[in-house]
Length: 183
Image (spheres, rainbow, N blue to C red):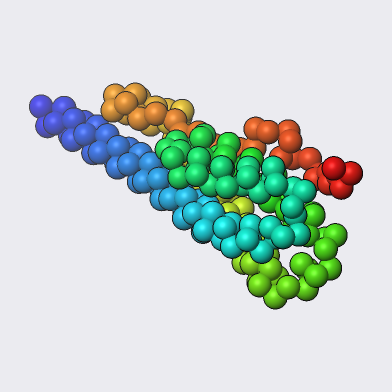
């Protein structure tokens, strides 16, 4: 009888440890996502100032400026990781275009306000890149826990589900920016 009781206590302790480990991993994923969210919000807060700085120089690129503004609004309404990732990817492409166009305007490049905004944006992009990497590392560890024995048994019992990775789905964002001044 004592042996059966010890086995039951060991099994319950193992279940509790596994469950708590899953909760910790899931919370780490949520925290990692919130770090991306914070950095993306920071970038979106910089965008109106950046757009105002380049507006006069980029009259022929009105579509790009309009798209950036629309993406900022759409991002505020997005709620899932995949929606925000898709909008982030689109915004990255639009920002690349703005930066590429700015290279052709010496007055704009010399503008201190634009230079400061560009530096802030560069720093924010680095932070976003790090936050994405941390998020994906956290998601990978969490999803791996959900798939290995015996954790997968406990995860199934308590309905833990896999989290999506933050990834670039758009081939457009992966390519170099092409600027056409013939318009």
